[in-house]
Length: 385
Image 1 (cartoon, rainbow, N blue to C red):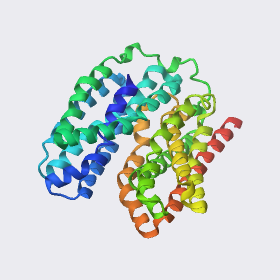
Image 2: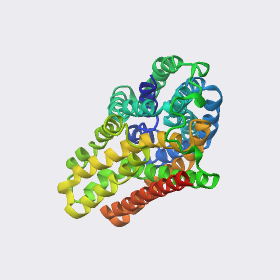
Image 3: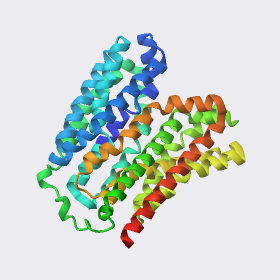
């Protein structure tokens, strides 16, 4: 239920501007970049509301929060469909930001942790496996609706789907009173870094927030500029578009690998492996050129798919299930902020360095791997102490 509801939530928010921004800007009389600026405002609002939504989920479970997010999504999409000015557009996206901060992955992860405690890793992986198809479903559906009923009709249709599909699915979720108490989870004491000293916990939180921020920056930058990067490396337009389309399926494959081959692996090992995928792909592309462009896209997608799961499982591993929602919200604040600026900042790098900008993103990926290695060392020292 959460996987399908999350597919709808992502398709109707995060993946909406890529298809509708041009039509919205043309109709209202503003530039496409201004439309994406309004979307960046939504991401910043989501960053601010995330910790508050997480704390509410910790207290009362995710069912009422996710139900409310469907209503706010519907209201935001309806408001967006009526936008006739820049101010109205920014206000509608700010409302969407409230829904995104309380209705996307962080809220879904906190919900299953509230229900299953330390045993939530498999459920988190399953949710991301379903929602990995959000762009695959959302982009063609938004494009079809825009061509048939216009962008305003498309927004209203997505709003209706939140009321007719997302709302009933979230209403069927178990109430928190029926959840497994987090302190009585069968594996609560296994493989959890809750025994870390206060200093090591603070250091782990800083490193984890950095890893999440870096990985979301790379993911968002590639989503916005991958075809342009491939063109700069010498690929044709048709090849660039076709190769970029491999990222979505590769993300799903990465999640399947996590769900099967890596299900018994330590989440820190899976995360370190995933952070190396983008730098490895960038190295291949830089040394061998467009002949391995498809391999780069696949490697990037595989790593990104596994890292999406790590965002949910690492805080559970290091800090335990108690207070997971609020902590997850705080850990994701830097990621949301850099995500809002990633298309603009990486666009400047592409404009200046062309496909050489990949060396910048590759170095960021390597720094995330080093940060995860530092977390591992801290856990080992704490265990020995």
